[in-house]
Image (tube, rainbow, N blue to C red; front, side, top):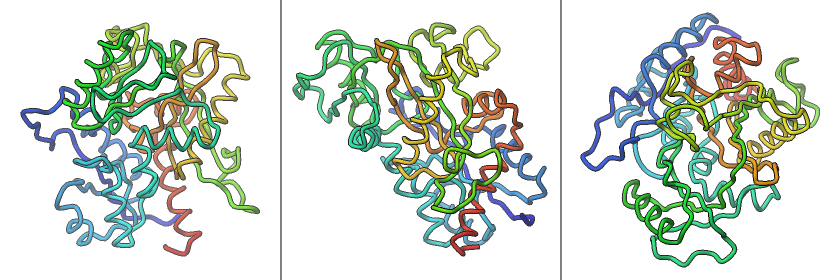
Length: 352
């Protein structure tokens, strides 16, 4: 690949201004200066030129003026239930290539209910669920306590606390009302899964018939799947749930949950989780990079929890980066592989 001019596009935590009514974890998804500088450094190590663009209201003018060869997109967006699609939509309108999934995929993946409906309709395992736009809607008789409550349109463990696990109708109503009031969006209620929690990172793109994998590191029809990472929520300051607070602790501190990669599980289960991750990613039309979360049921069977089509890329804290290190690859390799996959896609389609 030739040397490229790359705009790293993100929403920085430091640029956000909290509203008086904002939730305590309102900025959990936004990126630190450390993450942005690390991505730029990794891209420069491969000979590329980089600069930063803030994904704010002035982005369309800024990117039109700078006209990068491609954008390395990690922007979470500012507001709305499809906020992760805002930057991709602008870039598509301007015919500027970018890394990662497209507009519709980001919109669906941020909607946990829409995602679960697609997975369910395709026969992929996901826990029974119901969406609540009001706290007093009748509970589906097919759902039995304990149940788990979380916001429909949030990532990074936002809106999840120890109170998310509810055992009575009174607790359920209270938690639904809290989610709706705090996050100004519907609440997702699903069967509580008591087993171990895992996440699986995926790189790559689905191959067309006759196409060759991106490199020898790719299998499974065009994918490189990282080792299974187990999230031990019985360790650390936050017990029982993996939420925004738990994710904020450095992994070598007592407050952090356990990060075990490769997970100490049978090879058959590891393989099943990796195959399901690819299927879940494909089902939404994911591109280049994604991370799929799982939890085991009472009988040890895996269920899809959710998918992140913009997984965090902090060089120390992010799950997919931890899995990459366990896979024996560097941060620089991971970042440049995401870039190479995207550039290859656009080249195949004659867009660059």
